[in-house]
Length: 64
Image 1 (cartoon, rainbow, N blue to C red):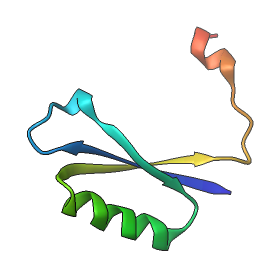
Image 2: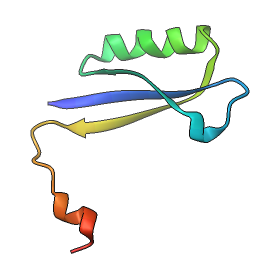
Image 3: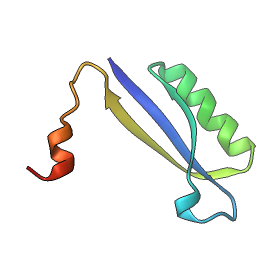
Image 4: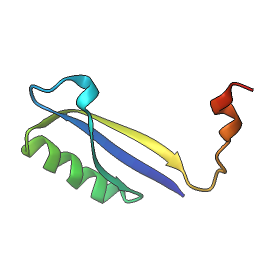
């Protein structure tokens, strides 16, 4: 299952102040969340994906 994560920055804030808006597997929910964010003072929306069926490889953290 592919989880979609919506991030956004409030108008006037710096890029590093990005906030998590929602996480969902539903395209409809994601579309509604994007509209909500734009109507509530957020811009610079970004969507990232997480594959929940893939096991994390923590060794990558240590550059092995």
